Image 1 (tube, rainbow, N blue to C red):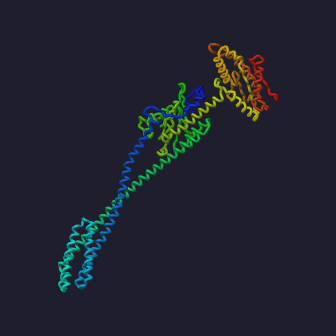
Image 2 (tube, helix red, strand yellow):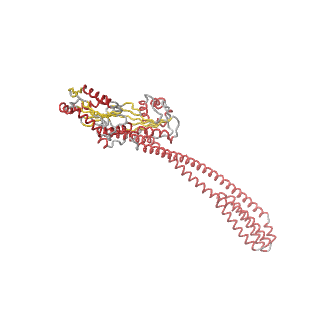
Image 3 (cartoon, rainbow, N blue to C red):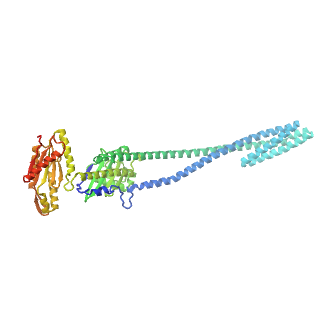
Length: 582
């Protein structure tokens, strides 16, 4: 993390009740007019949904047409098969009954057996029935059927005449009629009509089969096309589901880790979360940028994934660029490398990073803090793998929650361990630090000194100049202690005007030298309060930690005794108490 500007806000969390009680951590969207909940460009989601609905109508129409066509093809196939089979059977029966009639007629004439006359009548009826069947199935065969019916009727009349002559005993005349020219002409007419009928039936069957093949081919094409469409739709849905599951897993992993870590690990885990997003989505860079304004001072912070830091001077340009991208989401959909020259000028900060594809989201909190989170890739990435603005926004909210938790925890820690006036360690935390130093001393035997300081006649300062002047004296005294001591030294305010100092790696002689230097520095200092110049002095008690110290009570008691001795001897002094074992 890099802090580009910053001034410590000394009293940012002075009111702990209001900080902990309010639900100020809730993320709220930017409520500017004309802007959606999180990102102004997210209207593309609504347009995509509208396009899908509009595309659904022709798809449903094609499905219905395909279903109807398939049903019609099946029905036509079954109907054609039935008609074809019945026509073929009827045409065969006509030929058979024609031959049977001829044979039966000659048998009647030559033998005179009445059984053949009965058979002749049966075959004649069956032949008439088959002709009626064909006429019913194929109304278009009216002309050949009429020729066949007329020839058959005339031939039947000749047969009945020959039958009558045969019954009267004139067999010769009956045979002449049976074998005569007129009978042969009617038989040829019948045969001619039967051949035309057969050709017509064959043509009908062939045409029906051709039509059926075309319908079947069309149905197969439509069904195959729909199958391909459904497969593509299924693949796209599968990818969308995979993307949804991937993004949900990333979101779950980030939330699980970031909401369960301590405040000190938040910075590291934001970088880890950004690296996870980049790795899982085949990207190259991910950024989280924060801008906050407190007391007319703008603070800006950046986090990025591992190995993807910002070049010097690019933070402000990238902030402006992300704001423009979130304002116009169409630039992201078209691809940064494909933008016109006039639009590419506004996104130079992203293009200089070599990014071809990018996604970003903007979140504004209730406190006015603004966050931009962005993802970018230098190579082509499948659409279903690219993080959407809503996904990035949800990840940003998790990160913002972790950052806020870190700030609240730091504020509570500060309130619990520091003095609100001087911002030094309070007595409880100072005692804890002394206990740690005592354990370290017992373990390593490295020297450590303890100083207790008390401002001389501080009550008179309050009574003479007022409590505001007294507070100014305490603040000035704390600041002088901070400036004179090392960073590893621990300073605490133990009570009203009483202070304590822990000096690690300091022996007895060095501790006395430090105490004397602090006493002389305070004696020469003057504090101006309400136009008055106030001089202060200080009493200091010095001791060192000893192996016989079981807890912090013994060194604190020795330092306090030394401080009391300095007061008794006239103040503005340094006194010490050495442990009995030394």
